[in-house]
Amino acid sequence: MKNKGFTLIELLAVIVILAIIALIATPIILGIINDAREQAKKRSAELVYTGVEYAYTEALYKGADGATITDPTLETISENINIENVQKDNVTLDTDKTTLTIKTSDGVICTVTGNNAEGFKIKCGDGTEGNEAKYLSEKTIATTAKTSE
Image 1 (cartoon, rainbow, N blue to C red):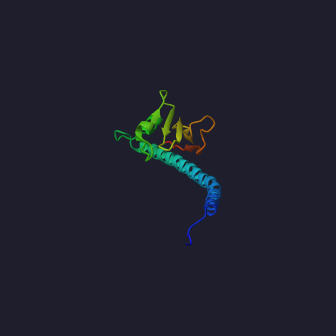
Image 2 (image 1 turned 90 degrees about the vertical axis):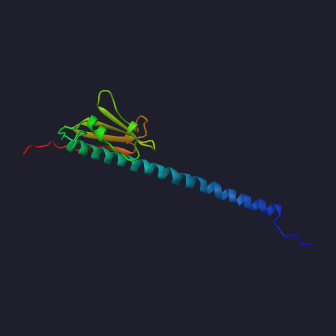
Image 3 (image 1 turned 180 degrees about the horizontal axis):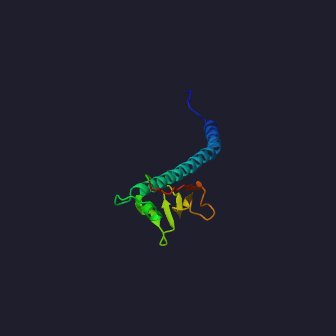
């Protein structure tokens, strides 16, 4: 009677080949995943920048009560901010009202500083010292003084 099947040596050879392929492929795949996460965080930082810029414009032309604001502050920006991946309780203004901190759902932390005269500066990083501008180099929302006609 002739047995059909694989010998133990053949099975071990296949397992060794699969293990070698897995050892080679795993770091490559993990690198691709990490790169994708970093790119997503950069896009998230750009989304925050756009959201703050929009909130500034919204505050400039229409305050929370509908009145025109000629000199938006960080406080009025924080009231008007609406960013898709940021919950409202993750937008905090410090007690001095000089720094607005925005935390996204993917771990990006953005700080907004400045005033209407010098512009609002935004930096986004991962929250560790020295990495304040890891995902978004310092950008400024240029402000323009309203002129009366």
